[in-house]
Amino acid sequence: MATRPKTGGRQAQITLADIEREGVRLGLAKLTVNGVASALGVTPTALYRHVDGRPGLDALVGETILAGLHVTDDPDHGVEEHLLSFAQQIRAFLLDHPGLATYMQTLFPRGASGVRLQREAIEALGRRGYTPAGGMMMSGTVASLAINLTAAEEHHRPYHEGPHTRELEKVYALLAADETLAAAHTGLPQISSEAYFRMVMTGCIRGLVTAAPPGRAVTEVLADLGLESPRSGA
Image (tube, rainbow, N blue to C red):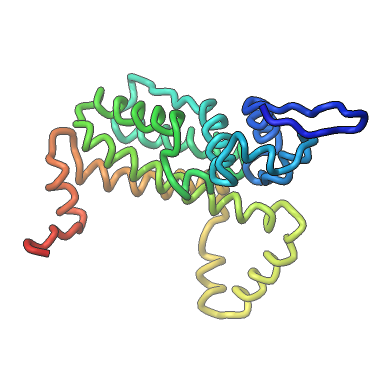
Protein backbone atom coordinates (compact mmCIF):
# COMPACT_ATOMS: atom_id res chain seq x y z
CA MET A 1 0.00 0.00 0.00
CA ALA A 2 1.53 3.34 -1.06
CA THR A 3 1.58 6.21 1.40
CA ARG A 4 2.35 9.92 1.33
CA PRO A 5 2.85 12.14 4.38
CA LYS A 6 0.13 14.73 4.89
CA THR A 7 -0.35 17.66 7.24
CA GLY A 8 -0.14 16.66 10.87
CA GLY A 9 1.74 13.45 10.11
CA ARG A 10 -1.29 11.68 8.66
CA GLN A 11 -0.80 9.31 5.75
CA ALA A 12 -2.76 9.23 2.48
CA GLN A 13 -3.07 5.53 1.64
CA ILE A 14 -4.06 4.30 -1.81
CA THR A 15 -4.77 0.92 -3.34
CA LEU A 16 -5.11 -0.34 -6.88
CA ALA A 17 -8.88 -0.11 -6.43
CA ASP A 18 -8.53 3.60 -5.58
CA ILE A 19 -6.54 4.21 -8.76
CA GLU A 20 -9.07 2.25 -10.80
CA ARG A 21 -11.99 4.20 -9.31
CA GLU A 22 -10.49 7.63 -9.95
CA GLY A 23 -9.26 6.62 -13.39
CA VAL A 24 -12.73 5.52 -14.42
CA ARG A 25 -14.19 8.71 -12.98
CA LEU A 26 -11.80 10.82 -15.06
CA GLY A 27 -12.36 8.67 -18.15
CA LEU A 28 -9.84 7.60 -20.76
CA ALA A 29 -10.12 10.84 -22.74
CA LYS A 30 -8.87 12.85 -19.73
CA LEU A 31 -6.76 10.17 -18.09
CA THR A 32 -3.26 11.12 -16.92
CA VAL A 33 -1.00 9.83 -14.17
CA ASN A 34 -0.83 13.33 -12.68
CA GLY A 35 -4.60 13.70 -12.83
CA VAL A 36 -5.25 10.47 -10.94
CA ALA A 37 -2.48 11.22 -8.43
CA SER A 38 -3.91 14.68 -7.78
CA ALA A 39 -7.41 13.29 -7.29
CA LEU A 40 -6.06 10.83 -4.74
CA GLY A 41 -3.86 13.39 -2.97
CA VAL A 42 -0.60 11.55 -3.66
CA THR A 43 2.43 11.98 -5.88
CA PRO A 44 2.70 10.23 -9.28
CA THR A 45 5.43 8.06 -7.75
CA ALA A 46 2.81 6.53 -5.46
CA LEU A 47 0.85 5.37 -8.51
CA TYR A 48 3.93 3.77 -10.05
CA ARG A 49 4.04 1.37 -7.12
CA HIS A 50 0.74 -0.05 -8.39
CA VAL A 51 0.73 0.44 -12.17
CA ASP A 52 3.41 0.28 -14.84
CA GLY A 53 3.36 3.95 -15.83
CA ARG A 54 0.86 5.41 -18.28
CA PRO A 55 0.46 2.16 -20.30
CA GLY A 56 -0.40 0.28 -17.11
CA LEU A 57 -2.85 2.97 -16.05
CA ASP A 58 -4.50 2.95 -19.47
CA ALA A 59 -4.88 -0.83 -19.35
CA LEU A 60 -6.27 -0.80 -15.80
CA VAL A 61 -8.91 1.81 -16.60
CA GLY A 62 -9.61 0.62 -20.14
CA GLU A 63 -10.23 -2.97 -19.12
CA THR A 64 -12.43 -1.86 -16.25
CA ILE A 65 -14.60 0.20 -18.60
CA LEU A 66 -14.66 -2.58 -21.20
CA ALA A 67 -15.97 -4.94 -18.53
CA GLY A 68 -19.28 -3.11 -18.91
CA LEU A 69 -19.62 -3.88 -22.62
CA HIS A 70 -21.83 -6.92 -23.13
CA VAL A 71 -22.91 -7.44 -26.72
CA THR A 72 -26.42 -8.87 -26.98
CA ASP A 73 -26.69 -11.77 -29.41
CA ASP A 74 -30.21 -12.24 -30.77
CA PRO A 75 -30.48 -15.93 -31.82
CA ASP A 76 -33.02 -14.97 -34.49
CA HIS A 77 -30.47 -12.83 -36.33
CA GLY A 78 -28.74 -14.19 -39.40
CA VAL A 79 -25.05 -13.49 -39.96
CA GLU A 80 -25.47 -10.10 -41.64
CA GLU A 81 -28.02 -8.83 -39.14
CA HIS A 82 -25.94 -10.10 -36.23
CA LEU A 83 -22.76 -8.40 -37.42
CA LEU A 84 -24.54 -5.09 -37.97
CA SER A 85 -26.03 -5.24 -34.47
CA PHE A 86 -22.58 -6.16 -33.11
CA ALA A 87 -21.08 -3.08 -34.77
CA GLN A 88 -23.88 -0.76 -33.62
CA GLN A 89 -23.60 -1.93 -30.02
CA ILE A 90 -19.86 -1.31 -30.09
CA ARG A 91 -20.40 2.21 -31.47
CA ALA A 92 -23.00 3.10 -28.85
CA PHE A 93 -20.78 1.94 -25.99
CA LEU A 94 -17.70 3.74 -27.32
CA LEU A 95 -19.57 7.02 -27.76
CA ASP A 96 -20.76 6.74 -24.16
CA HIS A 97 -17.13 6.34 -23.02
CA PRO A 98 -14.89 8.95 -24.71
CA GLY A 99 -11.34 7.77 -25.27
CA LEU A 100 -12.22 4.07 -25.29
CA ALA A 101 -12.18 3.90 -29.11
CA THR A 102 -8.61 5.21 -29.17
CA TYR A 103 -7.68 2.74 -26.41
CA MET A 104 -9.00 -0.15 -28.50
CA GLN A 105 -7.30 1.15 -31.65
CA THR A 106 -3.90 1.28 -29.98
CA LEU A 107 -3.57 -2.36 -28.90
CA PHE A 108 -6.23 -5.03 -28.44
CA PRO A 109 -6.79 -7.08 -26.39
CA ARG A 110 -4.81 -5.78 -23.43
CA GLY A 111 -6.53 -7.68 -20.66
CA ALA A 112 -9.29 -9.99 -19.51
CA SER A 113 -12.16 -7.79 -20.69
CA GLY A 114 -10.79 -7.57 -24.21
CA VAL A 115 -10.15 -11.30 -24.33
CA ARG A 116 -13.73 -11.96 -23.20
CA LEU A 117 -15.20 -9.70 -25.87
CA GLN A 118 -13.13 -11.34 -28.59
CA ARG A 119 -14.03 -14.84 -27.40
CA GLU A 120 -17.74 -14.05 -27.20
CA ALA A 121 -17.71 -12.56 -30.70
CA ILE A 122 -16.12 -15.73 -32.08
CA GLU A 123 -18.57 -17.94 -30.18
CA ALA A 124 -21.54 -15.97 -31.53
CA LEU A 125 -20.40 -16.64 -35.10
CA GLY A 126 -19.65 -20.24 -34.17
CA ARG A 127 -23.33 -20.62 -33.44
CA ARG A 128 -23.91 -19.53 -37.03
CA GLY A 129 -21.62 -22.13 -38.54
CA TYR A 130 -18.21 -20.43 -38.54
CA THR A 131 -14.96 -21.99 -37.39
CA PRO A 132 -13.00 -20.09 -34.68
CA ALA A 133 -10.63 -18.77 -37.36
CA GLY A 134 -13.52 -17.71 -39.55
CA GLY A 135 -15.30 -16.12 -36.61
CA MET A 136 -12.19 -14.17 -35.65
CA MET A 137 -11.69 -12.93 -39.20
CA MET A 138 -15.32 -11.81 -39.55
CA SER A 139 -15.82 -10.29 -36.10
CA GLY A 140 -12.34 -8.77 -36.02
CA THR A 141 -12.82 -7.04 -39.37
CA VAL A 142 -16.24 -5.68 -38.42
CA ALA A 143 -15.07 -4.57 -34.97
CA SER A 144 -11.98 -2.87 -36.36
CA LEU A 145 -14.00 -0.86 -38.87
CA ALA A 146 -16.64 -0.01 -36.25
CA ILE A 147 -13.98 1.18 -33.79
CA ASN A 148 -12.17 3.28 -36.40
CA LEU A 149 -15.36 4.92 -37.65
CA THR A 150 -16.45 5.67 -34.10
CA ALA A 151 -13.05 7.12 -33.19
CA ALA A 152 -13.27 9.43 -36.22
CA GLU A 153 -16.82 10.43 -35.24
CA GLU A 154 -15.66 11.20 -31.71
CA HIS A 155 -12.82 13.39 -33.01
CA HIS A 156 -15.19 15.25 -35.35
CA ARG A 157 -17.84 15.94 -32.70
CA PRO A 158 -16.33 19.23 -31.45
CA TYR A 159 -16.64 20.62 -34.98
CA HIS A 160 -20.34 19.77 -35.14
CA GLU A 161 -21.45 20.30 -31.56
CA GLY A 162 -18.66 22.10 -29.73
CA PRO A 163 -16.57 25.27 -29.79
CA HIS A 164 -15.05 24.64 -33.23
CA THR A 165 -18.20 24.90 -35.36
CA ARG A 166 -16.74 27.90 -37.19
CA GLU A 167 -14.07 25.62 -38.61
CA LEU A 168 -16.84 23.49 -40.11
CA GLU A 169 -18.32 26.57 -41.71
CA LYS A 170 -14.97 27.17 -43.42
CA VAL A 171 -15.11 23.66 -44.86
CA TYR A 172 -18.56 24.31 -46.30
CA ALA A 173 -17.28 27.55 -47.79
CA LEU A 174 -14.44 25.72 -49.52
CA LEU A 175 -16.88 23.21 -50.97
CA ALA A 176 -19.20 25.95 -52.19
CA ALA A 177 -16.33 27.77 -53.89
CA ASP A 178 -15.45 24.79 -56.10
CA GLU A 179 -17.95 24.10 -58.89
CA THR A 180 -17.44 20.33 -58.99
CA LEU A 181 -17.37 19.87 -55.22
CA ALA A 182 -20.37 22.14 -54.75
CA ALA A 183 -22.42 20.11 -57.22
CA ALA A 184 -21.37 16.86 -55.57
CA HIS A 185 -22.10 18.17 -52.10
CA THR A 186 -25.53 19.56 -52.91
CA GLY A 187 -26.45 16.37 -54.78
CA LEU A 188 -25.99 14.23 -51.68
CA PRO A 189 -28.61 13.95 -48.92
CA GLN A 190 -27.82 15.13 -45.42
CA ILE A 191 -27.55 12.07 -43.19
CA SER A 192 -26.80 11.64 -39.52
CA SER A 193 -23.59 10.13 -38.17
CA GLU A 194 -25.55 7.09 -37.07
CA ALA A 195 -27.05 6.60 -40.53
CA TYR A 196 -23.64 7.01 -42.17
CA PHE A 197 -22.16 4.44 -39.79
CA ARG A 198 -24.94 1.97 -40.59
CA MET A 199 -24.49 2.51 -44.33
CA VAL A 200 -20.73 1.91 -44.31
CA MET A 201 -20.95 -1.07 -41.97
CA THR A 202 -23.72 -2.64 -44.06
CA GLY A 203 -21.61 -2.38 -47.21
CA CYS A 204 -18.61 -3.97 -45.49
CA ILE A 205 -20.65 -6.72 -43.86
CA ARG A 206 -22.48 -7.67 -47.04
CA GLY A 207 -19.16 -7.98 -48.85
CA LEU A 208 -17.70 -10.13 -46.09
CA VAL A 209 -20.72 -12.42 -45.84
CA THR A 210 -20.75 -12.88 -49.62
CA ALA A 211 -17.06 -13.78 -49.68
CA ALA A 212 -17.10 -15.80 -46.46
CA PRO A 213 -20.20 -17.97 -46.06
CA PRO A 214 -20.09 -20.44 -43.16
CA GLY A 215 -17.93 -23.43 -44.02
CA ARG A 216 -15.66 -21.77 -46.56
CA ALA A 217 -11.96 -22.09 -45.71
CA VAL A 218 -10.44 -18.90 -44.33
CA THR A 219 -7.47 -19.18 -46.68
CA GLU A 220 -9.83 -19.19 -49.66
CA VAL A 221 -11.70 -16.17 -48.33
CA LEU A 222 -8.53 -14.20 -47.74
CA ALA A 223 -7.21 -15.04 -51.19
CA ASP A 224 -10.53 -14.03 -52.72
CA LEU A 225 -10.35 -10.70 -50.88
CA GLY A 226 -6.89 -9.95 -52.25
CA LEU A 227 -4.46 -11.31 -49.65
CA GLU A 228 -1.31 -12.52 -51.37
CA SER A 229 0.13 -15.85 -50.27
CA PRO A 230 3.60 -15.64 -48.67
CA ARG A 231 6.34 -16.38 -51.19
CA SER A 232 8.11 -19.67 -50.64
CA GLY A 233 11.62 -19.24 -49.31
CA ALA A 234 10.99 -15.63 -48.29
